Structures are given as C-alpha cells and as structure tokens.
Image (cartoon, rainbow, N blue to C red):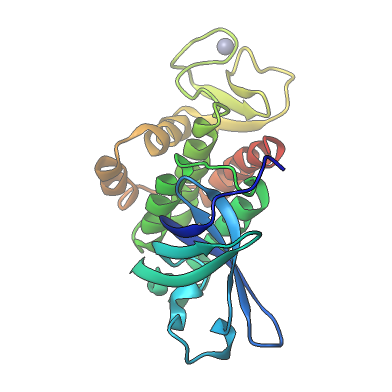
Length: 240
Ligand SMILES: [Zn+2]
C-alpha cells in the first residue's frame, strides 16, 4: 500500500456497476467514478428498502455519488440521480446487452485506477442503446471500438494494416486488424465486403448526431456485426 489515504467526504460523477446485498440488509455497490476509477462502497441498511437510497443504487444508475472515505473503506451517503436508464429494463434484448457491457467494464477495469475517458463513452453508448431505432449491435460496435481507442488498441479501419490501401472490394477483420483482400489471402478472420467496412467506419468515426441519424435508418447484417463485435471484445478482454 502506498501510505494512508486521505479520509473525508468525496463527491464524484459516476455509475453503479454492481450491487451485492447481504442477509443482514446491508448493501455494497461497485461504482465507476470519475477521478477514482472503480471502487466498492458500503451502503449500510440500503438493502432493507425504505432508506433514502430507493432505486438509486441499482446498476446503470448515473449521478453524483456522495461518499465518505473511512480509514479502510468507502461509504455511500447519497446519490443525486441524473439518469437511471430505466427504459432499458423494459426491453430484454437491449437490457441483456447493457448488462453485458457493464459486466465487461467491471471485469476489466482495475479497481482504484481512474479511466475517465471511458466514462462518457459508456454513458453515450447506453444512450444510443436506449434509442429504440438504433440497432444494438451497431451501438455496441461503436462502444467497443471507442473503448479500445482509449487504450490505443482499436484496429485501424481507415486502411489495410499491411499495404495501406484505403478502398477495395473485400476485406478481412482478424485478430491483428483490418486487411485488404490481397493481403489477407490465407489468413483467418471475418470476411467483409466494401459496403460493410464503410458502415463499420461510419459507426466508429462519425460524430454522435451523424451516427444516430445514420444508424436509425440503415440496414445491417446482425450476424456479421456480432462477429465483428466479438472480435473487438476479445481485444478488450485480452487488453486488461
Ligand atoms: Zn493490403
């Protein structure tokens, strides 16, 4: 340990990643906070209901978290809820995906290591998922790609990772990156046509408003996009 941590009150933006209730009616929450990263906090009595927390300690609730830092643990005192993503809970498919994202974040990030760039990416990705007109599979690609971008591990989608060509008829997305048809012969990976690569680029690179406008109306091959998402997720899991 690097010496005693400062005690006292703490107020940070963040999101609830997990909650665990004990039979005694106490609750522990795993929070992902700005400037702090993920950390466990105790919310004594919260699991008994009635107390002040209400639904504000449910996973995916965003807000300003008020904590007290004791000598060897954090206590959650209050949550100013800013957004609870409640509408996701009414849509099983979107909810499953959101839970999986949250699970991946809590699995991969190191406790007490700030990762401030990922917080807004997660927030805005959940907003995209909440938009019923945006296919979840496309919101997920954008989320994973931007996450890997924070780590400097996102595959370069602009050109072939070997010869650098920017436009060609067929592509392969492999563990090593994106390659044009001529550079990828004999290599494993996901075969993609020109139009799909153009869409993957659009989903990854477009500013948010343009991304939403396009994603709400375009048609997608869910199966291919899922394969691409799994490929990015493997990079996230191995980049931990
Ligand atoms: Zn090439």
